[in-house]
Amino acid sequence: MSFDIEAVHRILGGRRDGVRNPFQVIDPPSPNDLDATAFAASVDLTGSADDDNAHRWHDGNQSAAADLDGDWFSRWNGGADPTIPGDANDKWKHGAAQLRMTDDRIYLLFTWDDGRRIGLIDARRDGARNLAGKYINLTAPEIVRPWAGLIVDTNRIDGRWTNGRLDFRR
Image (cartoon, rainbow, N blue to C red; front, side):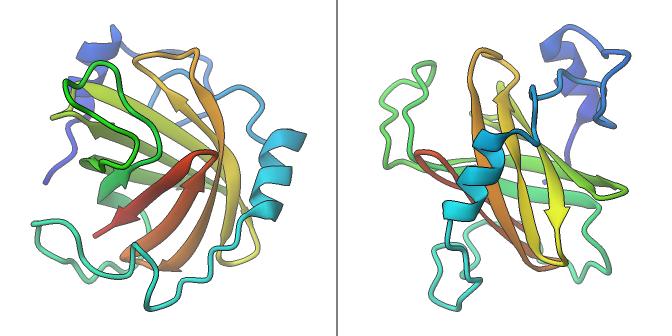
């Protein structure tokens, strides 16, 4: 699955200037605030072999990436998207993602519902593996939630938001 940033900009009405993120979309507000850091401190992601994200759940080719930048697959659960008929909290929403790093920050732009819905995570690195920040639903920007992640390796990032999982795989 290849990530189409131009399609994202078409859906969102164009590029934004004056934002932090390299994708030129709306930034999550205050990604380093107390809500984000307290949530990250409360999350226990271990990267274990029996984690929900440990086994491959996508149909794409697994790459042997040298670093984190580039195309990924995404999935999340824990909330029902009202724009998807029959969706429920326990159903996984799958899509494509792209990761870009700048200094101590990681930006994950991801889609679901066949690219019709789009989100962005802005997270700061806390050490070599831990991530803390916020998620914004770019197609419903009033939805902003804390997110915490664990870089397991260059093919797996385990993630959690306030109501469930938000994971990335290659």
